[in-house]
Length: 86
Image 1 (cartoon, rainbow, N blue to C red):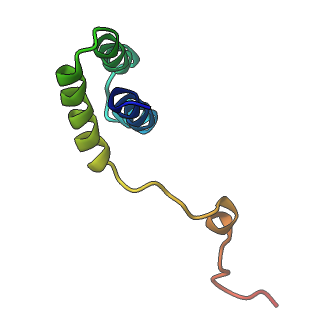
Image 2 (cartoon, rainbow, N blue to C red):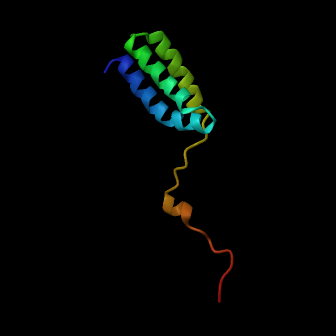
Image 3 (cartoon, one colour):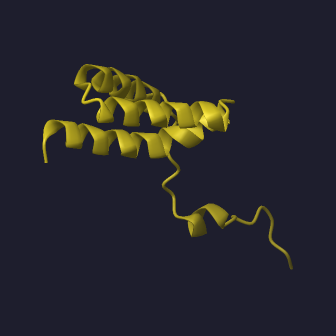
C-alpha cells in the first residue's frame, strides 16, 4: 500500500465520523457530499498536495468532535433506583 492509498483509507475513516457530525452542525447533505466528492477528485487527479490539505482539514475537524460514547448500550440503559419500594 503506497502513501496515497494509506492517506485515502485514513480519510475514508475520518469521513465516516465527520459526515454525521457535519450534518449535526447544520451542514446540508449536499455540502457533506461535496466534501466527499472533493476527496475523490483529488485522488483521481493524483493531486497529493490538495489531498493532503483536505486530509489535514478533516483531521482538525475530527479532532474537534466530542468523544464517541463507548459505554455499552446495556450499561447506559441501566438505572439505579432512586428510592426503594416496599
